[in-house]
Structures are given as C-alpha cells and as structure tokens.
Image 1: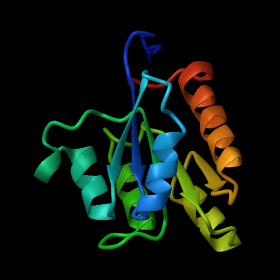
Image 2: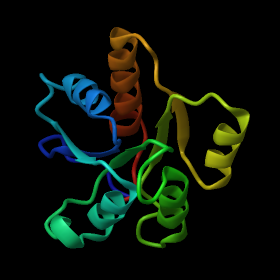
Image 3: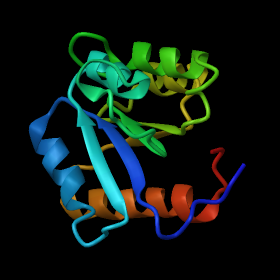
Image 4: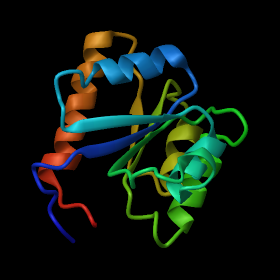
Length: 146
C-alpha cells in the first residue's frame, strides 16, 4: 500500500450516461487541477476503460470510480460485480452514485462489493459539497492500495 504522491493527478472514472450529470460532476472540480475526470457513458465502455481495451487502450488506472446503476448496454450492477470479482481491479474503490434510494439497490450494491453508496442530491451545491467531501476522504484520509 502506498500513499499518493501530491504532485500526481487523481484519476476518477465517472460511469454515467446522463450528459447533464456528467457536466455537473465535471463542474465540481474546475479549480482542482489535481483531479482528472474520465467519463464512460455505458457499462461496456466502463469495462473497456478499466481493462484498457477498445478506444481506451491508453486509459489510466482510476483511483476512484463513481458508478451509476442504471446504464445502457451493461448496467452498473454487472459492472460492479465484474470489477469486484477481478483480482487486479477489486482494490479500486467504487462509489455507487444513483438517484435510487430503494433498499434493494443500496443493499444489492453493498453485497456486490460497493465501497460506498451515495444518492444524487437534487441541489447542485449539495452535489459539489458531496463530491469534495467524498474525494477528500478517499484521496487525503485513507491509504489506497497502489
């Protein structure tokens, strides 16, 4: 396990198919040059990114994944199961970021290995605060496996 070097970028993979949500997420980090947000709009593209295949052969290994559950092609539940079943990928923290507060989605995500489950707030400022708090925790407080 290694601490992240402060001069490096934090790589975040956002798996989200809603362009408005992608824009808001990217807006949460405009002044923070240390965070790079990558987007995969489908579960298939997320897996391509993580396995560095298809259009993502040069993709960096993300330090953190924010994953929507309801995605086209391959849904977020299957992406989560695949990531957490892979010996190389399972150490990447996966935060489910969903509009759903359904108990089945929350408990199902944790049973599939999610590291956190967050409900998307309706208010933009609350979303920004949530993202900064979450990233501060994962990037500054805990020690991540390299």
